[in-house]
Amino acid sequence: EIVLTQSPATLSLSPGERVTLSCRASQSVGNYLAWYQHKPGQAPRLLIYDASNRATGIPARFSGSGSGTDFTLTISSLEPEDFAVYYCQQRTTWPPLCSFGQGTKLEIK
Amino acid sequence: VTLKESGPALVKPTQTLTLTCTFSGFSLSTTGMRVSWIRQPPGKALEWLARIDWGDDKFYSTSLKTRLTISKDTSKNQVVLTMTNMDPVDTATYYCARGISAATAETGFDYWGQGTLVTVSS
Image 1: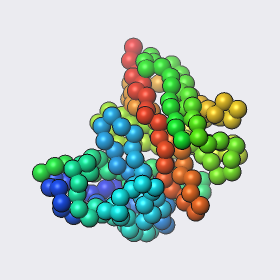
Image 2: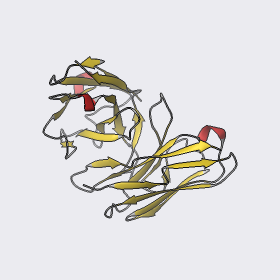
Image 3: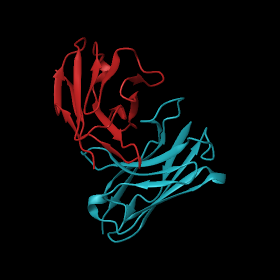
């Protein structure tokens, strides 16, 4: 089973700052990686699919990069609505089994 | 596209949980379509449970596969998940979600239900 490790667990930042979140896989997942934003009481929101593609309607300040075992989600300039928990998710090639990282909580400083 | 989960809010330990995902805006008979179940225990991370594809292929979490069954009713636009031998640690919000539908996309869930909280307690 592939384990995703996200770092840091918590990040305290101010609006306007740039942030990079990390997700490391225990073995290569190619580019089969997605990122989500999750706010309390809401469904998770897909931000990035296949490592670097923004999902429909996602602002350009969100970007994803990486392949293999190391991935990053970058928010170029934090908006107040960006403070949330962020998860990465992978799927294996075949069978297509999925797993999520433990999440990074982005909080307002 | 919308998805909505339904099922009991409370189950007793050892009972079987049955959850239904009713969706609209797409068909699970369309090539490439797939629906997964994902859960989140209170204060914990998301956990993928199972997936069913348009061709009726089924995939399960390695750690839970002996307890899970996923099925679909294409005519009703529904996906059903059953989980046997429920335990208090299975208390969670259960979500259904659609596998991303984009030309070359492979990884991601693009539409989610709002989730349903299931509490396991005697």
